Length: 312
Image (cartoon, rainbow, N blue to C red; front, side, top):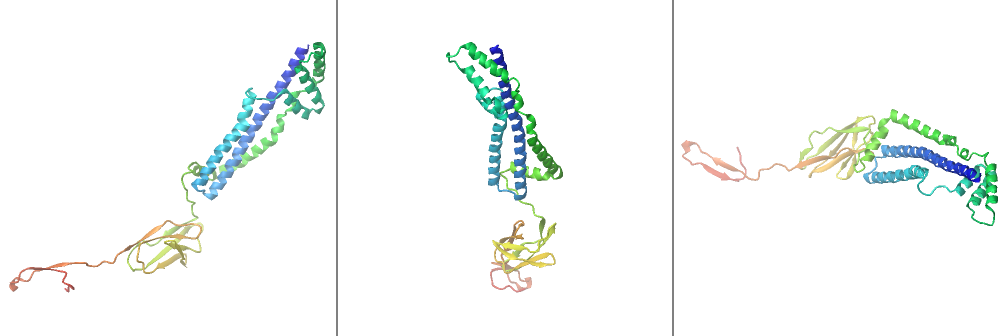
């Protein structure tokens, strides 16, 4: 009788252990999805507005990999391994401790049954020990150990996950670029992406070549949603405020003697870099003249070089 009772008792404990790890697995899956969605949304928001440097994006990618691996192992792999019986699982003493929190009145009886079953002391007769175990097991038959674990307790985190999924889906449907652009930039973490400007710089000068000592007036206008009120021209590392002439920005560079690079900025966004090329003034370094006198002069043809001023 004791063997049958004790086997049923052990089966109830094992059923509790299996349900415990199944509960941990379901809970871990929900938490895994919740953390991944929240983390992905968080870094997508940061990247969308910040346009991180490649080094920072590399650190984000490494952190993401480590974090994902950790929560996968902790919340999913670990309970799966325990559920199929690999590795160290809950002992019957652990189960007694957990059940006593749900049913405080059975704590001592659970421990007594386990201790008596494992007691090899011959001080007491086997029949007496078996009778005591049977009595205590009969007293616990009214309790369903598995009911101490309630899957409905997961409804709170299920609700949170559902709320996060709804919010995430709403943002993704209404603004897909918000996530896709951020993802592309993070995947290509070695590439530096330039933050788009809300306006474009349009340089009106078609010719950026001039002769040494000449001046050049740079003229720029902006097109876009947001037009700046102030614009600066950066000339070889130095910024100068441009004159705003009814939406057209102008600046004159006087007496240019060497080639230089310029770009335009409103202190938030910058244009591409333009090259102003300076050419040397043209001059005649040498010349030669072939003189062919009229035939009636009886003079021969003559060639002269660098004779000074040549007047026609």
